[in-house]
Image 1 (spheres, one colour):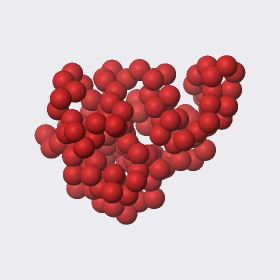
Image 2: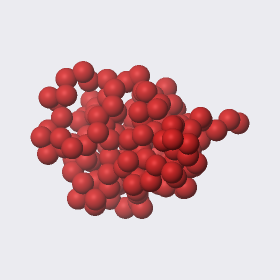
Image 3: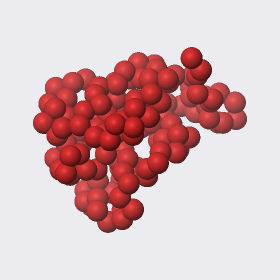
Length: 138
């Protein structure tokens, strides 16, 4: 019931939001790259790190993440947007297929989206009747 050491880039500049995402990913076995709160460090990771997925806040320190998303897309790294923006029209059409989750984070929906991005079969993550597992304790 884990994401089996999958490497996930976290782009988030809000401390509590980053902490929540990192804690959740790590509790399910991911190796988190980041979190990073600057576009420059994120872009370096997007270009040179071995990544299997990414979680992107739309606005990092006043800069939109579109160039970062372009680089991830170029490398075929799946990503989702996690944002407080209520207007879905803010996302460029070229990213229309990327999942978009709101803040505050719904952990169950987040885990479902991560499983889909990482191409896990339902039995690998959701053992009984496709129900979401409980978060590991400790």
